[in-house]
Image 1: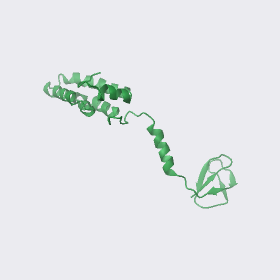
Image 2: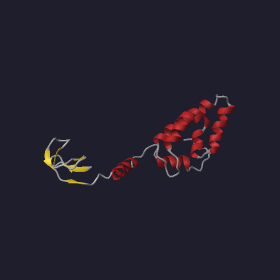
Image 3: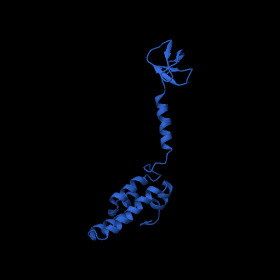
Image 4: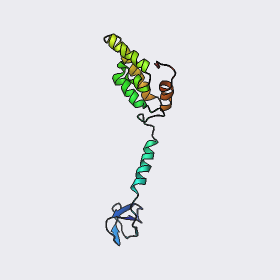
Length: 146
């Protein structure tokens, strides 16, 4: 593969064969070309794109604790009445309490715990990773609510 740079538009393109004259696929200019036999470094291009995406604060990125506020939020919204989000963030006492309320109340009080869990899930999604870790994961409380 041979890399060419168009002198008209400045864009790079490649050809399979070594040729003396090419037509730029971008602007259509025909020129005598100078070419190098270097193939573009695809690994460097991938790494630069990956660094760009890693710099974006995604809700599903794991924090220093290894816990993702996105996963915790989904667990709270979808299965929060059973306390699964508390088990995920390491607050097993609170998880057991939510689970026991759901089982023993036959669903009567489970609606209250489900509403609390949905609110917590929304809070997980709207907080930063640092706030999530401080308020929920590293909190000394065994039962952090809001």
